[in-house]
Image (cartoon, rainbow, N blue to C red; front, side, top):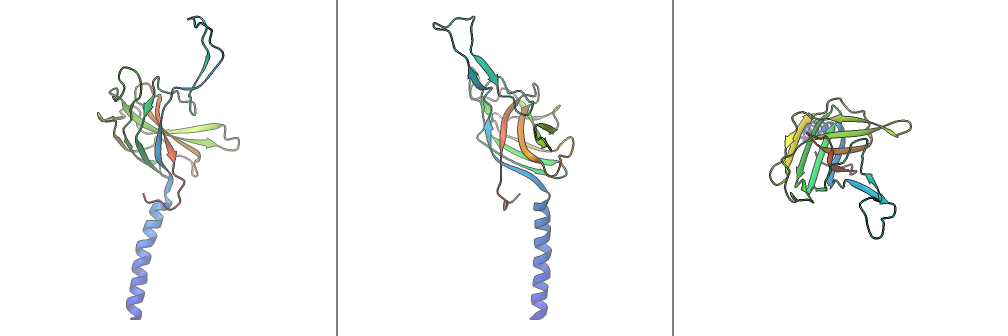
Length: 188
């Protein structure tokens, strides 16, 4: 009986430690996504009646120095896992145009991922770590995509105030952003 208990303990420890080690090398996770809105703010007074010579002030939705796409995009779902060594897996669903003449289409786009981390002590500058921006991953007709790559440089551990952007291969503007998963007991 003692040998069986000892064997069970050794087996359970052997199984538990690799799982916890695998979870420990996760740097940051994202669960859910936000599609881009190119304009983050409009201010000023429009003329009455409106003329073509005076426009309100428009603030573009620039995130961490990355320009927004020129049109609104939506994303149905996004899950991403970034490891300490810089390996990254992103599964996106339904990344499609949400406006203009091509609404509901993928615009023939290919995408890549960029992880941004704040730089201490001021946390007002950021490092950008990207997957292959030359090739990218083509969006399926329904806007689905999968990125399984390694970032060009390993991000700092910890990555302070992480932001994940899904970007257009051609214009390198951002289409969607990940929502950080703050749960501590997630599975990969």
